[in-house]
Amino acid sequence: MQIFISINDILPAAALLFILACFAGVPVLSLLSYLTGIAQKKVFMFKLARQMARLGLLFIVSMSLACAGGLGASYYYGPEADTWLEHHVFWESGIYLCLVALFFFGFFGLAWNWLVRLRWLHLLVGAVGGVASMLFAGALLWAVWRELDPLSPVYPEAASVFWPIMVQVYLLSIAAGSSAGLLYLLYRRNLDDFGRDYYRFVLGYISRGGIFFAVVSPLTCIWLYFAGREVFMPDHLIMPGALFVVFLVLAVLLLLRIARSPHPLRNKAAIIICPVFFLLGLAVRLVSYLEVADMAAEGDILETFMRDWMQALESWASGRIRMW
Image (cartoon, rainbow, N blue to C red; front, side):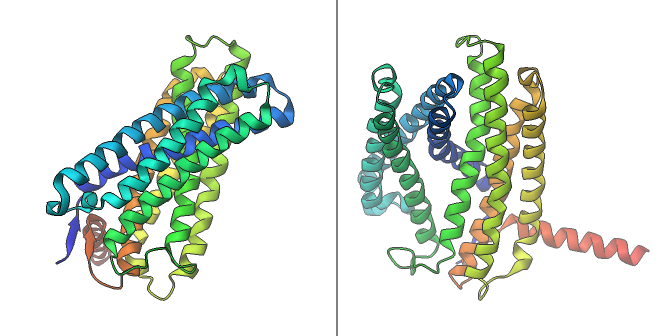
């Protein structure tokens, strides 16, 4: 039986993917800021790293609670569950990863004043928590992938198309996390009064980081193509791919405006709208991932609403051509 994925299915899933992206990406931003502070000996970077650590900890706590809820639901519903919630083995391993991320990254953020004197130990503690959060995100992606393709091996093969998808998700996670970081800095500007020069500097730094990871992320499509060229059906990827480029370019333009502004905090509209473009970009990218999973499974297991949109666009275009 073929599953139809509507836009009403994609938007909530994209919102969850955005939260998962921030869960994996914001801790990386905090660690990169900390490394930059060590390398450049800038006090501003350590303050930014601490603020991003607080935001990252919020996402880690949220994801840990959600994972604990998933584990509880998997045992409650048991084999009667008709979704992948029944796979409590994944939720058990997932809760361990979340607890590692919560413990180490929580220690990184909450014991800041004590650990900051031992910078490399401090960085190592945060790195363990950040790696655990990224491992959980990768494991969750693989669990969903195997639900779409149950005949896939227990662990992804080296030539699997899953690897470029996971790398791209990680890159987009850091870019999306930068937009969430900008929102958080805007919210905290009065609570953490570090001065106008601080916010002028760190908003530009976060924006440039978001631009870099957003621009680099499409390069993984080359890897994806060569990994799946035997089963690729480009017709199903044209529209979601084009929309992804549009939303990504709009998000990058907003980040560029913030980065180049002498007074970034005055660009409140750009800071607020930027996460929306990343959310929409992740939504259409999710459609592409589902289409790729359908191709990799070598079976017509699902159909997305983008196929209907593409057919409607082709019909409209052919009608216009006949009119001329």
